Length: 193
Image 1: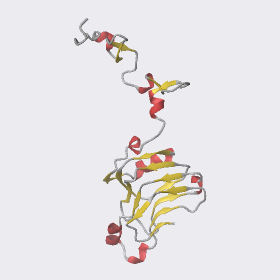
Image 2: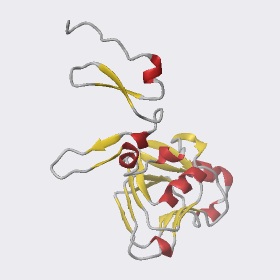
Image 3: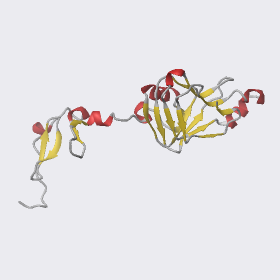
Image 4: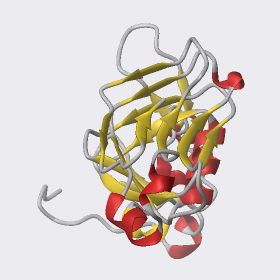
């Protein structure tokens, strides 16, 4: 056969609701699937002793804030979706500006942020506002990277200086929480306490 000629596709009835692939000779074939579901495809990691598992299982190895609908566009209120991400326990935060108000970390988390993942105070809120508040249930947690931005110009337009000392970027009054490589900026009060 001509190596450059395209092979015929299986007929519609044979390929409907199936995945397309190629046999050992390079001819297109249809194989069983559930119309695009990652739980029907297998994944095999390279290396001796690796075992096969579904693509869906592999994709769930680590969460990303985008899996929870967080936009990171700097204007959309990402608070509720960011809270859902944090409640899930572990994941990555890519580069972006996340407009959030007070979120609570009330479970063990392992959050890894891109150096330009910016958590920016979205609205003035009330006095004693805490952008990221850790509870005792968060023992054993880690937060690595990112920027905690107090959005000082927003606060100055909303409150007198008397309130600023009660604004906090991240409050962690409990031991056994590792916070590293985090930048705090644009705070009128205490960026970390």
